[in-house]
Image 1: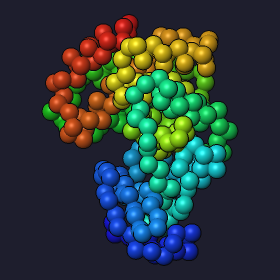
Image 2: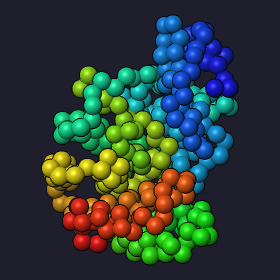
Image 3: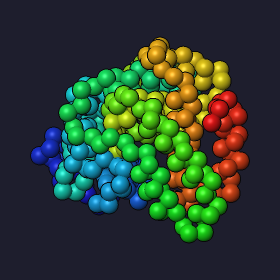
Image 4: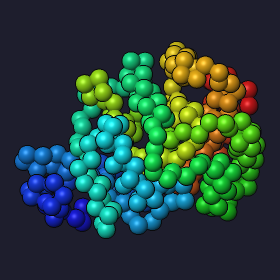
Length: 277
């Protein structure tokens, strides 16, 4: 890491020598576990490049400050605007997220977020722009292969736009990977994709990213409908399909997936969840 935490002793960080363990790295940010003899922090250092659908760093600061007060995220220690560094309390997850008890804790926490009167100026999600944005980043050789998938995404996006009535603050990249559990408490991590969107965005992303199958899927669906008793399940089917395709397009763009596999996997996905898309 090119910045030492002991440079920031004026920001409530002890002036100690820290060692850094790289946790993850992407074109947008690197995450570290920063450890001294007395303290452990989570550190995220952002590049200056901001993706179209990411929350600008300035707004991330405001959002994390607000959510930290309500214990939705780990305690915020410091935000350094100039060097684009966020430092948070390190929480060692002690619970394996595998059953309904653990997933209920996750869902309760994100439901709390959905009910928050967020003051930060989050953007409304724009589904058609998401498709255009991802297509613009595809290699020319991939576009022909993916045309049917792209047409499907546009079709689903238009149906969802017609059906969208409620917008709430959403995490935007909600999954067990972006959360941590300790002592029966759950904390949300990585809110760079936060926006205003229908609540099922987070619910559907959790199902897709964690590859949740029955019987857990049915239990989670019942939890969701307890919160939203008047909800049309067809909407959730559309969101599941859209997010599956969106996430796979992202992986193609970042060279983590072969384009030829998406269509067959999409058909298997719809079959597994009985989606009538």
